[in-house]
Amino acid sequence: MSFFSIKMSDYSKEVKSRYISPFCYILAIVALSNSFIYAVKFKSKSLGLYCFLSACAALLVPIFKRFINFHIFLANYVVLVFLACVLSLTLYTGGIFSNPIWWLGTIPLVATFLMNAFFGVIWFVIILINFVIILCLGHYEMLPPNVLLNVTAEGRMVVSFLFNASLITILCILADLIRDKAFLEKEDLKLKAFQLNQMAALGKLASGVAHEINNPLTVLRGAQLRIERMIAEEREIDKAMLTEYMTKIQRNILRIQDVTALMRTISEKSTDRTISEVQFQKLLSDVVQMLSKEINIADVNVEISYPKEEIYFKGIYTEIFQAFFNIIENAIYELNEAPLNNRKIFIQLEKDSHNIIVLIQDNGRGISPQIRDHIFDPFVTTKNFGVGKGLGLSFSYNVFTSNGGSLELLDTNSGSTFKVTLPGI
Image 1 (tube, one colour):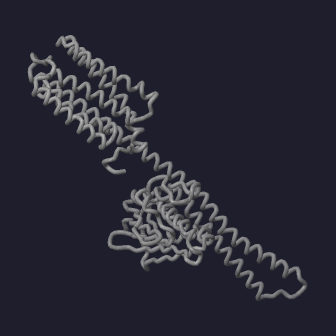
Image 2 (cartoon, helix red, strand yellow):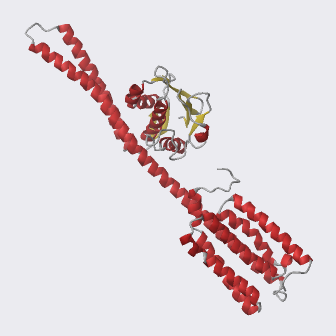
Image 3 (cartoon, helix red, strand yellow):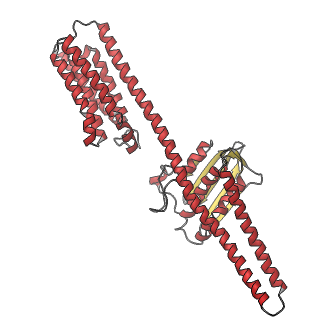
């Protein structure tokens, strides 16, 4: 979202709307106290009445909020009430030479706090127009009588300073609370996204493991039936064929052992949240192996380029594994619409003097320009409705950045290329 835009995100509206009522209560208290001072001490019934009406108008906002769910309207109404109160004080205390005229400078601050920069600029223009009007009224001697003629300049300065300092302090405190709350809610969202992603990954992992084990079990079952048939037939057993069957049995048993060993590794590491050395070649190979079912079904050709030297990274194994799993799985999905004989994923691992770099490139349909800038935001997905939740790349981005690295979507003429950068050991 651009800086100078009238639009506000739903999250920003929700957070800032919580502080409209507290600000209105503060404004009402200030206006009521001024109403009492001006009406009793300075015998200015008109100014006291204006301040009292401003307090009443401010107190109506919490009531309006129950019936009007339009943040921009309520926020502008609050700023308008504040402006009316300041203008009444300015007009009755000397116009351009009054101290309350400095309070006009806080109105754009309030508008920006309750809304955004666009409204801050708009209200800045409005107070400039009001400043010119007050200047003209003073020039032609059309201002109301000054009710503070007998008050010292020092007293007016003290009141003006305390008011401005108090208001700015309150707004800064509230802004700090908004920032802290936004950070906590973002962390909570990241945790929920991680949990949802883990649940989805668990289902995919279980499906992949079932596929990896069922295939060799089918071969084992077939070899068993053929050996039983050979034994049941009343003829000499073909030792060459029996050796062939035993070789198949041994090869598929080893395949099942590899799958279960990988699952045991992931299971053990999933409970270990400590930072340890991760061997990158092995990790990427494990990811591709876990996705072998999807790779075979989609008829994708995966090419991997590794350097000769072993590359290590210090991090949490399961998080790094899951992050790469998400990226490669998305690449497989993006190839569904590519020609069957031209579905390729290229994974390149390299290391320079400081960083580990992994490029994951596919020749699929690519990512549209409309969502490229938001591709790492939660719940943004290029998959069809109901297929993806838009949490995979967001999770991967958070994992890599929290580990001191980065995840980028590179500009390419075709397909998609993701670049992962992590600090090397």
